[in-house]
Image (cartoon, rainbow over all chains, first blue to last red; front, top):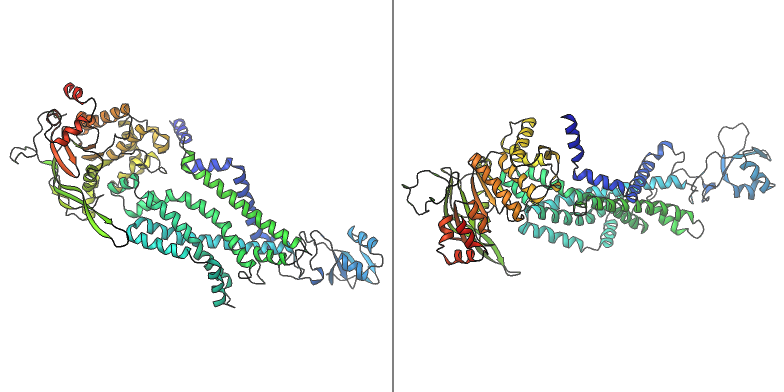
Length: 351
Length: 287
């Protein structure tokens, strides 16, 4: 009997399990999921293990290219901490008597003494170089990622809440209420987004809640599509026979929404949310690029790209490195969203 | 079990009818609001069902035929309050339903069940067969334990001819005929007295139709359930029903025992309906 039960369990494949298995077979989507998860962990956990702080400036190490060596300078051989950290170029220009040979010796780990000043190889390497103020670029990217991903998640979550609620109410009630609610959405759609944001920023200029304003501005636009999607789904579902059957047998409205409507709109909502995260991040970076978004000393991937773009002729890595991180994350998220859409599509999974 | 030939005409006086009808519908009208025109709307009321009266006796099958849009499904929905209640009264088991508050109506939702037309749309694709069949129990038999429910569901599935291990599967793993069997099991789960079969075989292949019709008859023989059998297929209605109502444009144009209705239709619309069925004369004689 128990062995028979086991066989039944194997045969019973829920639509969710089916979708998960199908997603597992989609390599691109799984790569997207893996990359995105890694990115999230790196950004949020980096203060725990990454030695450089995103805000500590070492002006003498301004704009060093990726993987370049830093040289520690001590005025006194006994001192524990380096008095200064300088670049190889500075060492060659200012201190060295025989730059090429001495620099090579430092690179090989020797401690050398030039006119009473002690030079040694810095143990800390800026893997992706530093920006114009000598801040570690990777640390800045992690910090920017926290804000970019945070904006992506929070704004998506906010638009999810508003959109699902608004759309569900509109779709379930139908009739005139539905018509009025959806016309309001149409009106909001027609609002030119950038002008709206610029106005918002001008009105609240110098406010401490710049970041909050960004959430507000993005959330105010992005819930519209979600509301439309949910409204369409609900309006379609509530006339389905199985909802009618539940109503005929006396299931309460709340249970109908929970048992019959919610599981059936969950698929499209998940898919759209996954695609909304990169869209929101892109929007935030657009705002930041235009100088309307995150303000210094905070950074987001948008502001990093902006700063990089200003200096791309001289220090190209300041543009390309954050841009690479950004676009790969967007790609990953879009791949995941596309994969989820295919996996959750009931029509294509039939038989 | 089938009462043939002795069906009493609905016009018979109360004295002649020995048993109380299970369901008595009197002067039922259902109207829908229709808005015409663009910006400035004109509201018109359209009769989906117009002054319909009939009775169904316990343990019998009442057929309800008519073409699409004749309002036959609306009658079924009006009984269960899925369509807006218009004028008229509905008595069920001697009690008037029309005046009841929604919570007072709840016991009747247990006693009256429905089987829908489209076996693909009438089950939530995200639920297992067990939860679909047990749904009326969750509402109406809250005292039942999970295990009791599961046992009952297994019994019901067996009764409708499905293996008990179907319980853990999902609707998309079944064919149309099997799904309709599941819907029948769901309708039976609250042990109802009356089932409204709303075009429940129309979407099925002919051979599967026969199986489902026979299943419904077997269940009637066993449990004494009363059916309101809504269909547009006259052959099925003749096979299945003791009496029949013919509807046209929301009104009942003819009613009576199936045999006499099919042998000598009085109304021109019934004539036309019957002549639209290709093999009608042979079937009528064979019966």
